[in-house]
Amino acid sequence: MTRITVKVDGVEYSDDVEPRTLLVHYLRETLGKVGTVVGCDTSNCGACTVHLDGRSVKSCSVLAVQAHGHEVTTIEGIAPAGGLHPMQQAFHDNHALQCGFCTPGMIMQAIDLLAENPDPSEQEIREGLEGNLCRCTGYHNIVKAVSAAAKAGE
Image 1 (cartoon, rainbow, N blue to C red):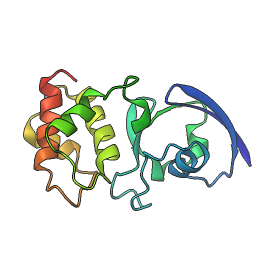
Image 2: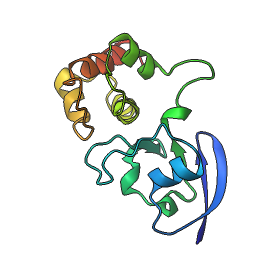
Image 3: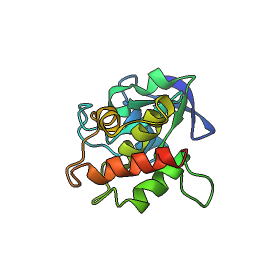
Image 4: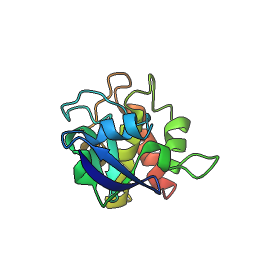
């Protein structure tokens, strides 16, 4: 076992973890952050996307021990108390989800995309989200949502 200390959604945690524990499993099973979805366990789908020190990462490709001393933000940590993050609101307003399975990772990636490029074109949005897969929507409304959030100054 290895002792790690990590700040998750603004709260510091210290836990003993097996060195091989993936960050996604630590978040879900130890901390109860079940909004971070286990999709493929191969880093192909992006459903497990979180922010590590402000940048999006696929948490199924990061070991929990690699997060030691760092800050992780999950989908549960992005919204103000009692409200929605502007990106969550844009997804809601633009009907950018169907089953919702990919939505947490898609939102986390979209937030990072706008942090890098606050005014992306449709093509830049599509390219910025290409590591996150949605099997339901065909991406049209997801792109609309990200564009709406950008216009709103997310």
